[in-house]
Image 1: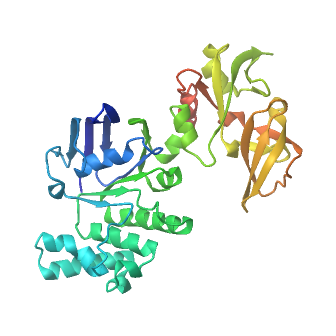
Image 2: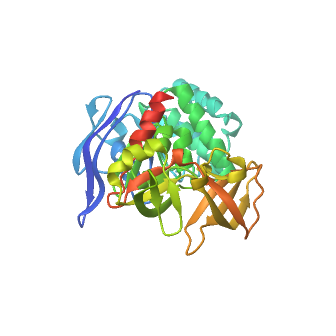
Image 3: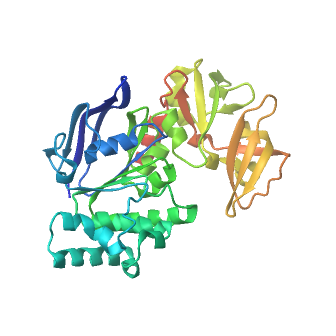
Length: 380
């Protein structure tokens, strides 16, 4: 096992294309860090620099306290699991898993023990005599993981390993990888564009955009205390709703005012953003904090609004309701529980839990209310 550290790491491709910018990051020994972000944000390039598959333009990467910038990939004591599995089609599962150990001239008895131990851990022992063409996608992915496990590396690297699987298998394999990390306790870095994977797998999650790491935190820290509008909108499913408007002081309270919606801010939030009255801001609220007002008696009258239902998506225990405000209208999505029974194309009364709202600066898009969430977490 080993700690992985990035010191001012950047990657610049020919033509002055900056793929990764000034990454400073510590992956603690035995932790599972997820790099998440949209396509092209630099997360896979960051991972490949750890593996030695991409040269580092500036900065240093250390594995287990050793600078590895100039160390060959085979000598870094890492194992990587790729998106496309990269299994040898002419070899059996057993030989695919054993191949790397044979190249390193491990004794046959040691190879056999490692392969069977990994196969048992991943529940693929009955597959050892099969070839890749005889495997399902989930089975092939388990074999690819098993091939990494037999190496007993200091660090596992996963590059979007589940993106070729169907939805049900993705969920199953997420659980398997989480269990694997719990059993092995080995340092892991996992790349994905899927924020659900990031939230369910990571000990820590690093959100990337345009080559920069915007925030590193525990999953619930990202959800509850996003540093920016981008992080707030990227983490959470469905994404956070954003309205653009102005902060105004009316009737002894601070309110968010847009052309079609006016909401009275919670006192704690108002105390923090009071110096921004008169400024343009983004108001953010998650779908799960917008309610059928009949089921949310705590809502103040000022924060109950008439909305028009555009689309209703029943999901069983909950229902997604796509809403539009009167007039020109702002589009929002709410996540109602199963007790509510909204219909398409009707006007309903909706309550906003403004204690869970977020305010972001219109120009910088930085959070103006993160301190409220931090103080709330500290006092709870």
